[in-house]
Length: 126
Image (cartoon, one colour):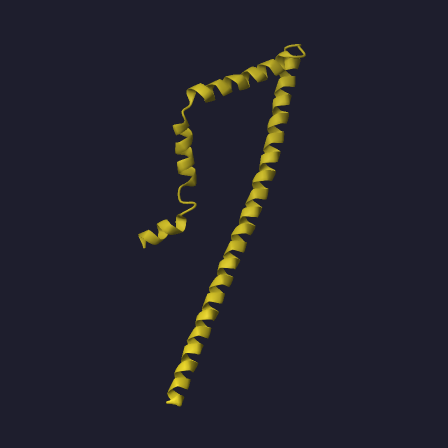
């Protein structure tokens, strides 16, 4: 009887060791996936920040150029800046009064569709 108990105990400890090894491997895989996602997110964030900075600087200097060009064409030192400012005030009024939030919601729905839960949707079709 002692031999049977001993063999069973060895098998159960083998199974437990294999199970613990499997759990450790799964944890390592999850850690690597999280690290990869964090790295990808960090690179994307840096890319967006750089593009945003360059875009804003370009926007500012193009507006200054247009305002100074209008000043030169109108022989004035301020009308060009006033015209550019009035243009942006008109755009602001159109955005506040004329456009509904549903337009932006539709754009967001189309943009972010199939991004966050892409794997869930793919699993359902299989």
